[in-house]
Amino acid sequence: MPTGIYNHRQTKTPIYTLERNQKIKEKLKGIKKKPMSEATKRKIGLSTQNRPNGMLGKKHSEQTKEKMRGRSEEKSATWKGDKVGYDALHSWVNKNLGKANHCEECGLDKIPKGMKRYFDWANISKEYKRILTDWKQLCKKCHAIFDKDCGRGKHKK
Image 1 (tube, rainbow, N blue to C red):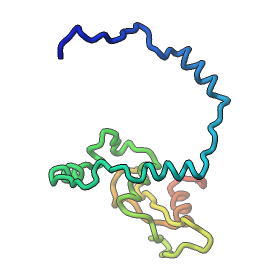
Image 2: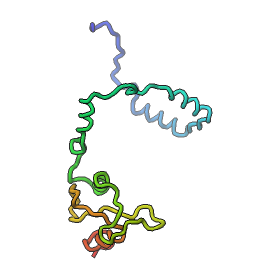
Image 3: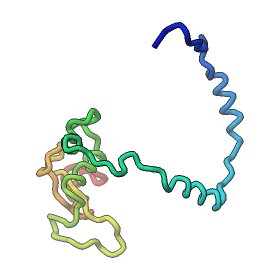
Image 4: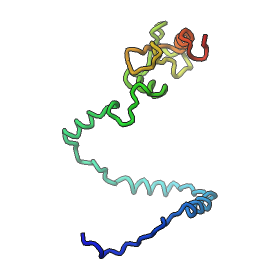
């Protein structure tokens, strides 16, 4: 591409300065968006209905499929290994072992009436590592007793 023939507007200061952005924010604070009518929603729905999907009618190559299969949590840039937080670790256990559905202590396998979630994964060694054999399924009652015996939870010794 030849140089020197383009007359681009060069500015030393950005067009949107912090002051200008602040003024715009102040003006827009009190303005509320009007709710869309059902007719408008229908028109938007119809207009987006026939838009082609980027992959529509195409197939991934075997090489691409293999790359997608090869992606694992361990290879992710955000993978923390054993330095993971409590909630993320429990999510990882649920993903790999499935949802807890019975108690290994008392043998309960049905959720009591009126309760939505009753079984948990409990860490046996209390080290909270990513070792799947270090977890067991417990009902809420047995889990509370287990945590109490370990010096954890609400009922510390």
